[in-house]
Length: 97
Image 1 (cartoon, rainbow, N blue to C red):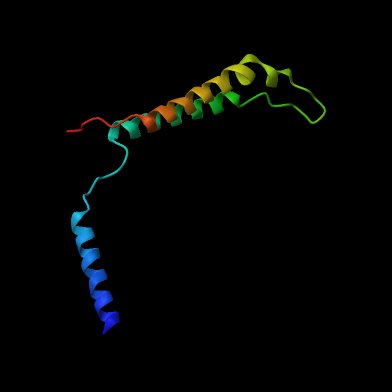
Image 2 (image 1 turned 30 degrees about the horizontal axis):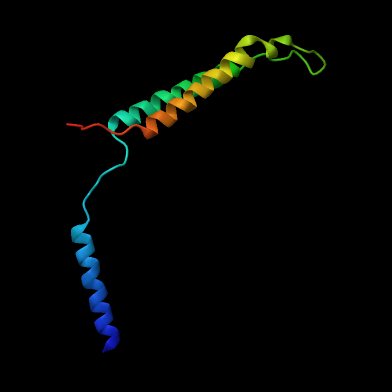
C-alpha cells in the first residue's frame, strides 16, 4: 500500500512538471546557425589554403611548403574562422518573426 502511494505521488508530480514545462525551442536561432555555417566555410577555406607543396619524390625537397600562403595566411584564416564560430555561438538570437 505504501509503495502504491509513493508511485501515485511521483506520477502526479511528473504530470505537474510536464504541464509546467514550456517549449523553449532550440538554443540557437536561424541567424546563429547561418553564422555557424559561414564560420565553418571560413575554416574550410583556411585548410584548403594549406594544401599543396607536394614533393616530386622522397629525396626531393620542395620549398613551396614554406611559402607565405601555407605558413602565415592559412593559419590566420583558420583562427579567424574559429573566432567567428565562437561569436556565432555566443550571439544572442534576436526576435525572429
